[in-house]
Image (cartoon, rainbow, N blue to C red; front, side):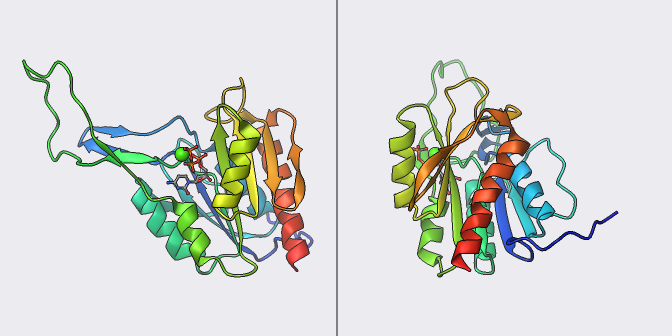
Length: 228
Ligand code: CTP
Ligand code: CA
């Protein structure tokens, strides 16, 4: 049953959340991806929906159930994701890029399964850089639109994250130190540091991703309120 909730700063806002790890094909039976489970992005989509937002979840493959009332746009590759985000962003108030995007993809994806032969004891897959979706979106950004990025780091967390905040012209950057146990990729828990251009970093406790999602969405909600 749907409860009649009070309006929140996010009520009626058009929110795009991306989630999961993109897939880049090597051949018909193989692809390159990463350890992302999609859990953080799905938890954020669910929390946004709970607060009355109109949520579109652009998701690379995951094992997760789509939160009730959230619109799903399934994607596979970084290129698919880039197209879907660029299209949806025009009408959006908020973009949260929780997807773990492949930075490189094979230059060629083979039409047939690659065979091992007597003479290929080693083989090389040549990769080429993918487009940086958040950087592209930064160019389209209109006043009032809020963009939120994630940063997965294994060292120099704050410095690297601060650079991403500036380079990608983000309003918020959620940094995870994925070298720490229980943090970031794949697990049920996370610990993040939330960076914003005009505020001191906010460091959360290690907690379930649904708890972290609430804290992240609280900060986004406060920004929406400030921007009026
Ligand atoms: N991102 C993106 N397009 C890409 C790569 C990343 O939009 N091609 C987004 C991610 O969804 C995330 C943010 O950029 O919100 C930071 O991703 P991350 O992988 O931490 O940083 P990169 O800029 O890719 O740099 P690096 O992996 O070298 O640290
Ligand atoms: Ca990357």
